[in-house]
Length: 89
Image 1 (cartoon, one colour):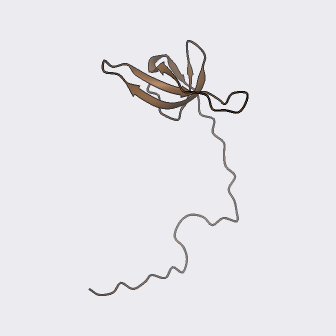
Image 2 (cartoon, rainbow, N blue to C red):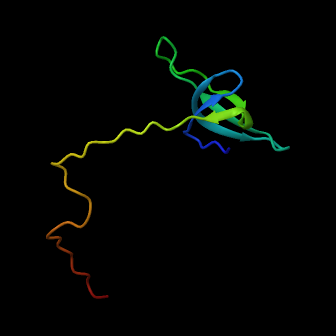
Image 3 (tube, rainbow, N blue to C red):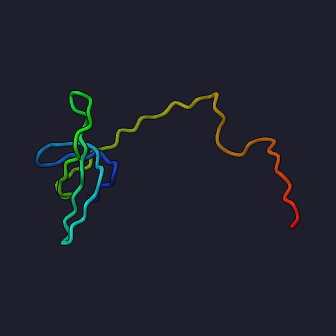
């Protein structure tokens, strides 16, 4: 399975999990993925740890439905758009 950067992954050997932050390709075909885990107990960012891509498992994406704001205008054409005349050349 090819890991996509930004995907949540878990190492099948150590159980370390986090976000795929980088990809490293070595000369003879070894693909390594840099994983950044969650913040430590002090709220600081932890260092990226590198794993072979073959031993990583992609975690399911947790999707959250956004509530539509009724006051916001929908996307699309605007009414009463005035276009400027293009001068003759």
